[in-house]
Image (cartoon, rainbow, N blue to C red; front, side):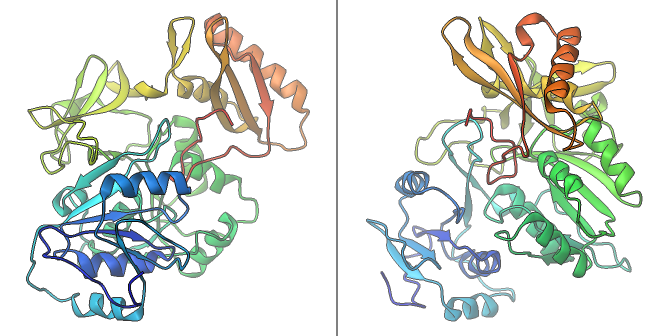
Length: 425
């Protein structure tokens, strides 16, 4: 391990640095200190399990790992502890300065349905959805509920800082209610989260009043139920659901308060980012992303610059709706089922606050559809509620799509990216 404060780097055109820092403020300072000096910067989640960490480090093969974890060890790379000296480098570099190289920022995918993969982005790709604050308008104070090492977390960081606003960083180790209390105390006016996390926010009984002017949803399908609930709770807020992915980058934003997006976006994208649909799959144009997973070299962008998002969509009237992830479909006797479509039916019911559909192995059908729900009223008759919801599913779904069981639980587990944990726990 290198001595504290020393940041040994080779020529910037060849140096690769991994940041594994528990404090999001240190991540920001580390990015400022290294951008334009290191050729690649990998952002690692501090809560990552050791097997995932070791796998990503092996693929990235860094020259240097900067960490605030004294116990971290790694073969083949210099490990240096964070120090105030590194922070001072960031402060000195906050003014315009010459760049040795064009740094690629590297992110791990969320790994919702498989092992995380590494994706490279240029700063141009990361900031293409960042909008500067309007002159004379009160400073927008963005709360950060995402891990800052995630693609979504960096989007919030850039909107808060590069967009001319303010960025509020509550301690993510704290409970959600504690984080919300801090954001209220710090006068947060803009907040971004996954639909899953927004449902948890709405369920937080002792949450303080947040005077939000901007609400953003991303990372999962935003259905009408959660959009309606947010409009009812935050009457003065503009509600936007965005589509972005680690591979494709930021793609589109919808402001009309309805699920899906207008079909006209395919012809006239309001943000200038071209999208298309081919064989029911959504593609996003992005020439600023490398287009191959780092390490494996597997391509995810075609020769015309379109990234296959893996999201399955369908058109109904003048609207495009998301059905689910192609790699998240459940195979039931040769038929494909998207969990989100059953979850949407359950979440339309006022008796349900959260829902998760997943699968268990079945020797007969291959996979067995099962589900969990969180009741809106914890004191309700759980057995009767589950039976009622199963009857609802039978009335609206083909037999093979109906869950074999629905279990009432206190909470639906989410992963580090704030999305529903899809694996059968």
